[in-house]
Image (cartoon, rainbow, N blue to C red; front, side):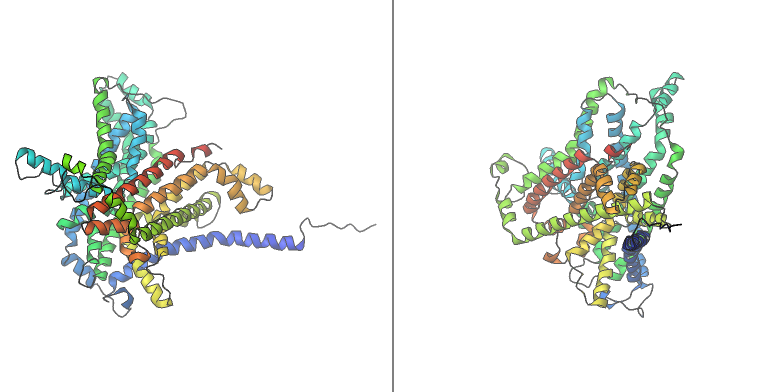
Length: 592
């Protein structure tokens, strides 16, 4: 009987190659977990270590010089309890004002017969394109108690010496920050309004309940969990923001946590109190983490409050009657106050030789000299290059890294995927100025130990921004990836496609709206975010546009700020329109 040889379908080299790929596939998620853990935990560890350090400078850190002196000084000498109180009022007031305004606009757009709803729906999110520092500067130019255009006009008309409204107050901070919170809150509230089953409200109406009672006992009750989650999210955003309290609060020594941390290391003529700044930042971080903890608990149990059923329905629209035009006027007033007015104010000052109230004589003296001066400054060209480079590198890095993390969380059975998910969300709880201070200490120590020259480089900003914006990108990418059916990926694997080929040929086309949306949104954040670069900026080598605007404003160069602000806002509006075109949600992938 002849010997029968059964040939292995894979040759020895192919088997070795397959075994190598399997090892890489098993080790790759662990490598990602370690890298993400290092990116998030290492800065926090350096922040805490710096808070206990009794050395004057970060590069003098020693384990022999540790103690609680910085915490004592911050609590007793710096009166951090007052800062906590100011922060609580500021965050609570801004959140309530922002959420209330956003809820009214979302209700008018989704649940009423207000005219022009399409334009309002498209216009409100464009407020994201106005950088926070330019938003705050515009309100200073309008409502500064002595020189604000509105206050000057009011005092000239009435003959009084009292301003109509003083923007340099806690109320001014709440007003300006609250307006900034509206666009994102609006985008989050619109789906809630849209998903309300009208049969619940109709049942209440059939039972004889008035529209007001129906809204209170049914509509608001069902929306409350979602609104509460959005409110906590917006409170986290408000506590992190630096631009508005930096421009409106610091000139009158009105401090919240973000400005107090910055003020401790920005004292001109004296050695910065680095240790005290770290101690204050630890308090700051602890509060942000507690708020984030409640947000996670609320979101984790959101399925208990589901209000979308399996049957199809069309949301019922409320007829406004004679209130249709006033509702439209209210929505247009918001768009004017948040988008048009800041643009017009900055355009006006950018065309002046010197700052003066609006008048016909001032308009006749308009000149483009400030734009020419800005373009002819070598500092502007260098800063513009740094900004573009940081923006491109950050947006690309965050998009790629978020895709890898989301794939591991959603598509694999990796044992550490839940830890990876939590680590990727943690940066949302780290305020930008706290992360900047953390990286300041971390890279100072790293350079001292290794002899490298990383501190002050442009790549430190890229690392900081990547950590800061990772949580949003991973959440958006995970939601979109869940919508892609696994059968497509399984079919590609059975055909022998490599993982990189699956990513390019399957996920790439299907997730393109989400990928582009994340890229554009992160690019916008990279341009408009200034708290982290303010801490890490070391002059021309890594100065970006936001830091230069802060420096020009701080030195009183208002006309140049206006010229740069107009060009920046025009660029941001273009990005915002691109964001509206592609969207975040990757809806084209839905149902695949």
